[in-house]
Image 1 (cartoon, rainbow, N blue to C red):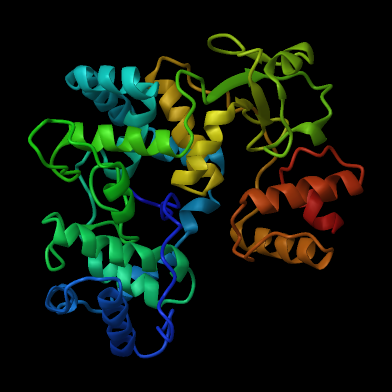
Image 2 (image 1 turned 90 degrees about the vertical axis):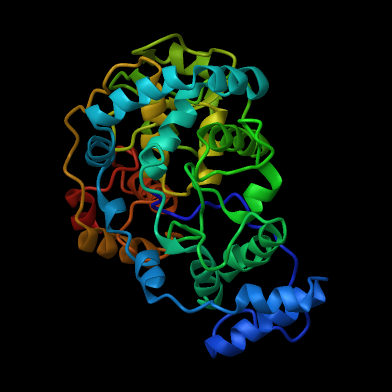
Length: 389
């Protein structure tokens, strides 16, 4: 289940002079794409056939703006996504594809839990890969002026896949944001990181689990995954910490965190690695040390809550215990969080879009204003903080 578009393939060629970058008449926009495709060297007849059936899909735009799931707290979100059924299926898949995962671990140094978690969350292990027409989705999102720099290059990547015989503009389907296959990869990612994992001479991310898993591993590696290193570790914390040092903006060697009383619930502290202490629901909620590989997750998906849940689920699949939920103060509703974002913005803090979602920018702003007000700076927005502002 794809919840936020993958951000692993932002770079693409600039549009040709005079080409319509986004907006305006949809037919005119498609004509501009055709002109640009030909200018890139694609056969005109092939270009015409490729774009012949494309249409604007309003359901794609509705899905793009429907982000209510990210208003859940980490605990709510994790309990929603990590079911006993997914745990059981994940462990069964680990055994079924043991040879594939051994190749991944030997080649890329990525633990099987990491790929299993993505496979589970993206498509329920391939069970539901999305039924949006991929070309329609990519062109619709390119035409929409919200993020054309992300999606427009993917249209031309899809054309390249079509010329390779791996993309049918009429029948290829996937997620609303244009990702394809069991681990949901955008066309450019498929071209650059696709791997024939089953040895049949083709890369089929929709029908071949070995292809999908090996391709996902190669993509993570290309994004900077550090081989054979941890990504996330649940910890217990003392109540004497300087809370302003928590969050992704601060890193210390894990051994320094240990010296401050941070203790692992599973495994051992990776003492020589840099780590950040994450408190997704403040000082009274769950606590995790995030190692460098954790940041690679944000190249796959930019939602803090999704990323933390995926990384934690990977730990669970590798034998970690259920996290301690603690007893955090209740979070703010979406509307209250919007009010808080507006107040933070008025004080000069960059919170990004006023969307009622507790993203990285809002967390950082909350932490800063907590410090200004002499409150425990744990980046968790509460009713008390909203009232004080």
